Image 1 (cartoon, rainbow, N blue to C red):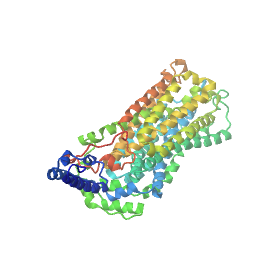
Image 2 (image 1 turned 90 degrees about the horizontal axis):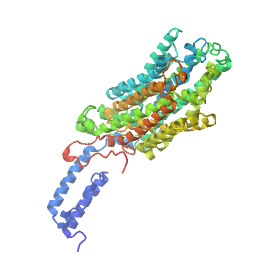
Image 3 (image 1 turned 45 degrees about the horizontal axis):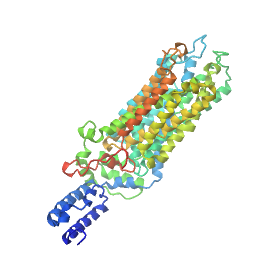
Length: 602
């Protein structure tokens, strides 16, 4: 007896096998895997009807496959070997993030100095500190500007093009970094008002850099190493934080050596020399230098091919630009671009039902995880000095002069950046395309939760002098797993999972959600971390829940971030168009299977 029941069935099976082999060569076997199992009709020998039905289905699928075929210019980018232009793009985009981090976090190095200079109280036991409202404004106003900039420039990047607005954000950062160190008059109201005004617009420029840099890098990168390239851009933040500490160390050490002032407890007025007013200005203004150096190269970058082809619908320019970049001949497929533009999957808007169905949960996942992360991350980063002072790692303020206090704070933050922040960022760069975004984010939130509770529950133990080094090590590990975890992945994923025409906007929304969390962390932690004992609070602050309870709250927030991570899909190894479905047809009769953007690959 023949293997398949009859000679006719054997011919029928062989015919379909030939067709399926042809389709396999077009890389379409996975969607058609259901065709591989021999149907009952073949066993019963009903050749004509069985083959007819299945051939009709195969023809429909082949037509659909040809319609969904990737544009040559996009395929060339996806399959391109790693080369010089990738690293050039990383440096150009990354220097923006170097400046972002320097400007956002350097303010925490000089706030205590500002309090000593402008809010000194004659006869007080402790040096002057910024009042609660002023401290909240100085620390948080740049974050408010960043939130606004992320939404505005994210939307503008999809409307005008990534390159068209990329230079504007850099100019804002350079001008406002310099202006932050200037002031109208020498009275404290004028100085603080000027500082807050320019730091808001500095933040506005920084905000624009988030969606634009991420989108540009994702659209330039190949699909094999795309995660590492986007993460490398973001990892420049670590060097920016480190540079802020190093510049502060150099400037404060130079001034402290030149103007050897006594401690506050010995001479309250003499502990803050007049020249200390230059220290914070120099530190803040230095942030303009790296951004200014990259302006020319930003303007030389061509527009991304995905924006030019899929959004601007200019196939000829996309092919010409990428031919120069990749140094290969690329065909301008104008007919195919026009055909793709007419498909329903490539036309729905942000507030449409189709977007909600395809990407609604994804957007919820990216916004919620970034929001929860930044509450914890910015609370820890902006107020490291307060935490270190609370455990006694930084000496009491009255035992130091004003400039030496800047030196000690910068030394502590530089050590944390060098030992945990920078290594964490670059571990993500190394492992993201092997482990995947989901695994790294889940792992990061998990260990942040564990270490935060390990610090908070036995908090009194860590405040004892013999255990302070242990506290610093544990605290550093929370930063390491923040950066080898959600702080990097929340930046990477939104640049990969949304359609090209909405990519910058959706990344801006996700990032703005994060900055809303940062604002809550920056403003809330100031008050929450105050001692429950009225006599132990900083001047002008009401009693809070204490440092221990504040750390417990941050631990709970990290745990919630771990849960919301399950809403985020895994883009590892997929092209941007595979993730977004921009080459898919929404026709129900040709919907062979639902989208497979699973969180965990199976």
